[in-house]
Image (cartoon, rainbow, N blue to C red; front, side):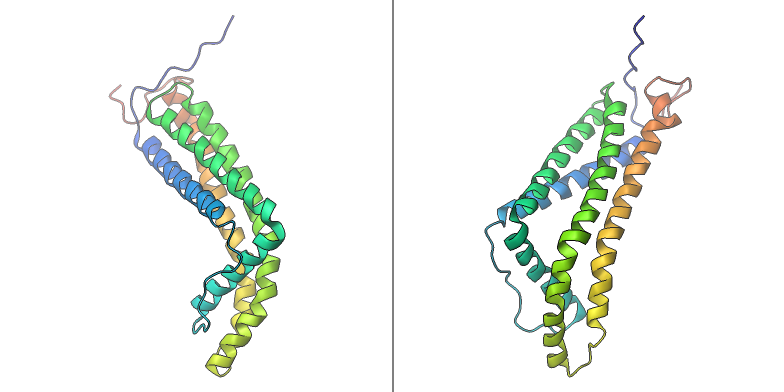
Length: 209
């Protein structure tokens, strides 16, 4: 005997709307990032100021120079990463459309998106640490020397700061992405999602039942 398919939810509870909205913003960000990367694939040198005068300027110049080096040495990998971003973004757009249209498959698709997000952010952290970070540390001393010359030695802590940021940014970004993916799995995989899609008895949040 075939198992009954989950019924389509009749209402959109607040948690579903909020989670889907964040998923939509994430998809837009990923899609734009992938498109921007592919569009800039023929750029061999970044447009950066000749003189940097602050930690923020130094960090921006360091990342720009590092990305130029990454393109030169890992162009295929960077393009593959950008294409992956586009594919993940398109999949999330599809999931959000299913959720907002109250498609009975919305819960299953959302769970798939949650696991996709976990895997993507783990891979993105590895990409940042193993590919981008070494290039950042390769160009950072030159940037620090420029800043130190311009400021009379006043920014002698800049190199350790850039080194710490090169570790922290991929890890923190991945942590937030995995945290949100975990929330997606918790909401759609937990009691709220099961009740909403008729897999468990109860009145869905926001319903009048």
